[in-house]
Image (cartoon, rainbow, N blue to C red; front, side, top):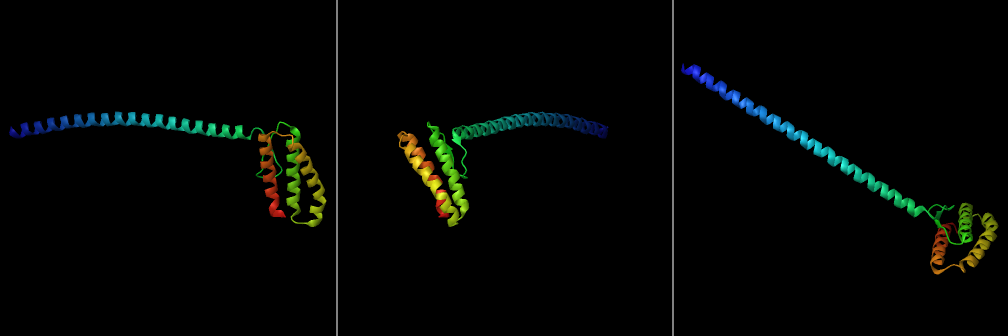
Length: 154
């Protein structure tokens, strides 16, 4: 009889332990599902933040590029001036500089290009004399950038 009572007590104890273990597993499952949901939301939020940041950066680049004219020389951007003739003069001077650099020290080619470069500089000086202080500084900056590209070829 003792053995039967002892066996029943062990079975009851095991049954109770199994119910508690099952309840603990359910709680663990619920916690895992909840944590996973929070992680998914955090990942979505972070992704949205990254995308928004990338859009802002791209828009800033576009905004900065607007108002610039493409130059024949790589690395030199020509801003638009109130007087379109100034922008045109710098664009033509950049094209001249590209040809000058392409001459690669060939005196025949450089001599043939010299009158064009001199004429562009004279016209540019005439146009620059009519610019306000701010635009004159932009003009000088771009002209200096173009001439610095030419300097290694001399």
